[in-house]
Image (cartoon, rainbow, N blue to C red; front, side, top):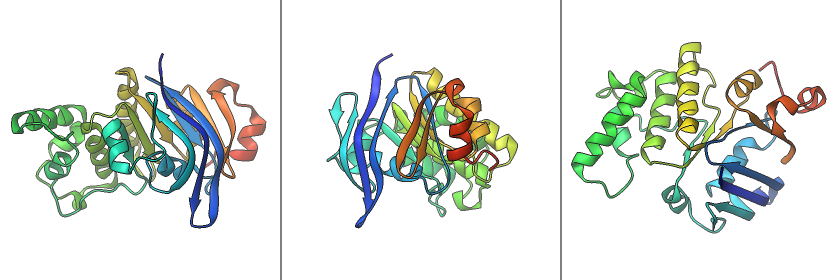
Length: 236
């Protein structure tokens, strides 16, 4: 498989405070990588640094192109989708209107409608709610809406931060199904997940973050109990 994302020496800052310290990570096409660690380890900051939402230094190369100096909209245009932990949806807009905002720019009206119908096929939980205001959706439905909107941008890499937080088991299963399908279709997924049992279920490879550094990166089955006990909150 070809390497899509190559991160080298990534550092990230909030003002004068440094949060990430020389993080290296690569992700191949078709790969699902779980990024786990305790709260405050720097996982969400890493996601934000990849898409240019925090001050950063180092190298972020996507499909061979250096993105470290690129703005967030350009990074999205290059093919990186990002679903934030707080499930950003436009509460006053309908599901359909939210999804239209995610369609890759430049498409004609007929192509936009076709893309939306594909999204409803992929995310059937939303199909019956297309005229509903996004703010009235359940947490699981809002998460699916955020995923669907990002998917409509046709990303080759999807970065998803805590997609199962607070969701009912059925909604969790739907979210994981969609992420698996993205990987099966050749897209890469970086899944930031607090619950280790979920990460273990969906990803073959895991990266563990602690104090702004990667303390492990390798196959899930190679993850030792010492790493789990020290760096991962398994029970949450």
